[in-house]
Length: 332
Ligand code: UDP
Image (cartoon, rainbow, N blue to C red):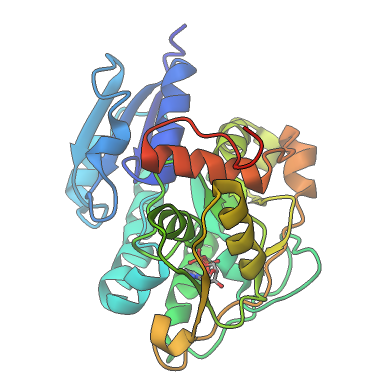
């Protein structure tokens, strides 16, 4: 049933954006995607390309007149367009900063001016090096030196949040901020960072799995199939307006253990290869040792309960890469 609601998704040709677009169309929205295809891909939208309620426009969120013309006459914007991936941030610091600061400023300004509601997709990176047991939304940011381009993504996203929040405080602008923690799933590319699809690809190819540092750093991977329904529910909950809300995974895993799990789930003999951070990224690179979400707020607001296991995430990503259904090795 059509909802009559017109949604704009910036960055809709990306991995997470394309899953969101599918879900919004399923729920009856009319959806316009804006994407500059810098890291996004038309192929991610293949399943919806001919949908009568779907429209794709190629262009940049830095182009304000263009953005205005696309957003005019719509009801809400999901803002996902950003320069993402550690390699993109380090290799192209200036363009990344422009997109992540000025691009978001454009989207927020226009959403306010044109009377849209907004969901700003942010990131657990805003917590930086805070290694708390469970990061609740009011946890401190602990960022490294501004001279390390590695921290510019976290800094820019923090500015984006502050900007959106300032509009909420000043004008009651209806915006909700969602902080994603290492979301993974089909269509995610390992090319720009993103460890899980990288290691899965290496394991499938029988190549060494490159684990950076000592591999004891941990992450809580969340599955795109768990995250998207919560994201949409949060965009429709007035109790979430003006809030920042974590959406993370339930299981903390070290990157070394992740590599071992990938090897065993896929039945791959690929060895683990430890690589220095300086060689993997850049001299002076600083990693986050740990990043564990407190998902209580999302649970309270929209019943978010991440249920997909890491083994299932690995299988789904591998199936997308190989293009065929897989079962866990040894359990066929
Ligand atoms: N990582 C790794 N091997 C790779 C790519 C990444 O060991 O081929 C590590 C990376 O250093 C980090 C973790 O995996 O500790 C997660 O990296 P990703 O880029 O996926 O996300 P983020 O660092 O933003 O959490």
